[in-house]
Image (cartoon, rainbow, N blue to C red; front, side, top):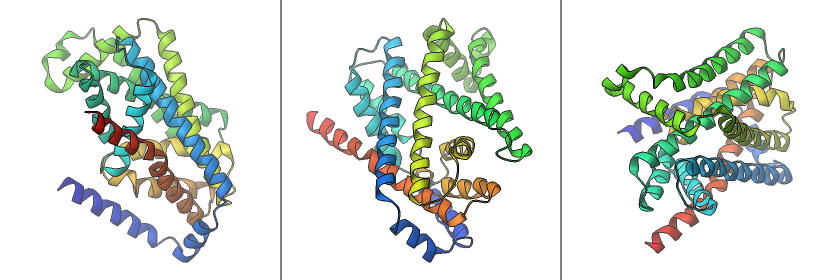
Length: 301
């Protein structure tokens, strides 16, 4: 039933976009996209996925997991593949946890390793968005820029406050809050000093920077004519919205958010939609190594 609802939401969002977009022009833009920039975009996206897997590898080492970097790269690509073919943006996390459990690691440790990786990745996105908005303040109107700064700061401060939740013992008595208490305990155990945390957040920042480079290359492929600074500010909120699992693999949500946000700088709506569709297709293509690793792991069982 959930999958049907997500499908209906995705269809509804694209139907709404169809009332704003000239689809004959969209078809022409997609057909005439510059292949060289698209190939470069694919390389950036593959690099982003690889580096994200490396971040997970480094976090897992702190939990004393002994697998090689190759294991994490293959598992991360498998997770990315599942994210694109399943109707949820978090389906791949279950795949990654299962891979670790099959290696005889604790379910709890595997779960928190993936959760910490997710959280650190999210914080890197917020940091990048905050820095870009402050450095290039005035690119968007003040109200939008201040909204981004407020959300980013709130998220970063919320993350930092997690480290202190371990001291609030009564949280462990409530089922919903117990998860945050345990996560706080894990974070403090993994990051007794914040220097290592800063390194992992820096890796996350580069991961998202590469994703934005991917989008920039795609924008050049469709002759969108937007500056890189605009993308640095506008794309992180789009990435955040696609985390919410209310459509199929973020389709529709991503396109609607991009059209809405980039309208603030007078961008061509049809070209924005073309760039977003190309990015969605690119995510699927870049995740295909995961299908190979998944089949390979099944054959080895």
